Image 1 (cartoon, helix red, strand yellow):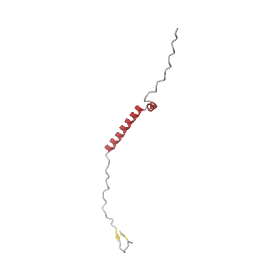
Image 2 (cartoon, rainbow, N blue to C red):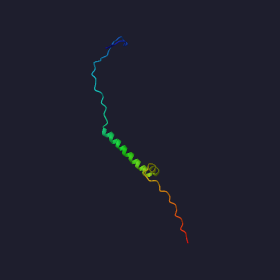
Image 3 (cartoon, one colour):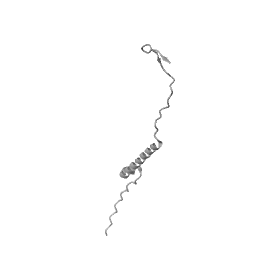
Image 4 (cartoon, rainbow, N blue to C red):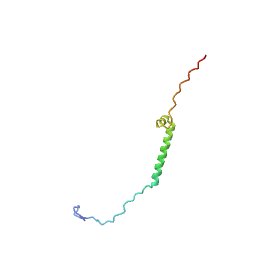
Length: 82
């Protein structure tokens, strides 16, 4: 293929008979590394949730993990002296 219109009156030859190279291979992240990262994140989330529920009674009561505080019992009637 020849391209015309190059300054200086020359023609430029464009070669189309090149050897295609192999596609660039990107290094793949191993599946095990992604799985380990996900499991670590899950374990940290469980630990944070457990700590939060152990130290925040309002949240534990809201989720139903801790029973509600018992109702105050009425004081017994004074005994009659005879």
